[in-house]
Length: 227
Image (cartoon, rainbow, N blue to C red; front, side, top):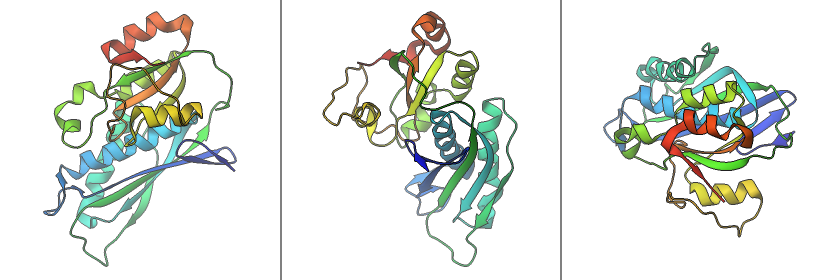
């Protein structure tokens, strides 16, 4: 059994997951957004973790603690992600908590996929960030600054990206240190490297140096070199 960033390998299978609490449509939620959007961003993170392990999703498990009424809305959010990247929506199954009524929304999305290539294969590209670290309400008001899944999917298909490493709540610096295996390593970037990136609004990418011009053309001004 092999551990990846936030994934587990079981044979050829890669299992990834993400969750949200206090974000949704209930009166006591801290961030009030449609359930569909909550599920979309949770699925986004789990998908990016699949890509980080060079895997492609084949099934989704939905863990719904918000009540039966939220189930269909959560499924729509999951479907939105796969439609965004131009992929067939995998089978969705799971469970809803119906015995207890929670005062706040809670949901988790688990994705199961299969590795397509060796995730530890050597690569020699330079590292970049794509997107802007955003959290909370910024995710909704500054959506144009979020790393696009559709663009990432196209970059992967075109062979521009050698590795993907999503940035989460710990921020760019902490993820860079985890990626490089050096807890004391700094990082040079025009972005705030300590700010939470919420649902992976910014991604660390290793890009083929021979394809850098193509990468800049596709990924645009949200692409920044890190060192």
